[in-house]
Image: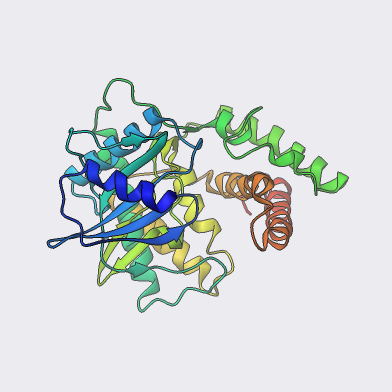
Length: 315
């Protein structure tokens, strides 16, 4: 049924297809669409995750970033001029297929020819994305999730009430609730750079193509703290043997393009750690989720405890 629906969906675009092949099935189902002249990615979005308005907004932002010279998948309009196509209640869009290979995979050490150079260029790409976003005027009705105080530690965080993960011990729950209160104060008191962000620039969402980097998977993009953007990447390199050098390169690349105050970066790394404790709760049916949940909690409680004990300066 799903394969048939994808075949029907591609008819919404004015292209001649040679093949439509399922290549990924994570949050979305992704098909590689081959034509005589090009290759595209057809995304079948997970039902109920994003509204039509949110997806139209995501595609509008991606289109604007492409127009500003950023390297990311470019949305392709259907025959009716719309980027988002909905049929039988299912949401589809079509993007250009980018060359290159993933920077890495979750749980696997990075293997890069030029680690520091790669992270410097990634920092530059982040900064350019933020600068282009600030210069762009979103269309009327633009709506995306907000990685703001409410979205991170409010009553209904975007990725769940992490302090209520049912596998937490009483001590861990108390620690995370204490952190939540302290973080709320820090977010309220600070002057934090805020605007549109990708929000999920993990190694899996960065393609390396020679010296070029392509940013992919904008599913979680929205309004948010710019330090949360940096923290997302930095959090996932904590176990690398050269983590401090990679972090310095990332920040250096960013600041070569756009100024940013990194004083509160440790706070956002701790906030990012907590999001995973909430995220996993609704995905415990996934293979390996129990072990992943345990790792998420162990890491988050360590990071949070370090931030609290250092007075908010270290993680």
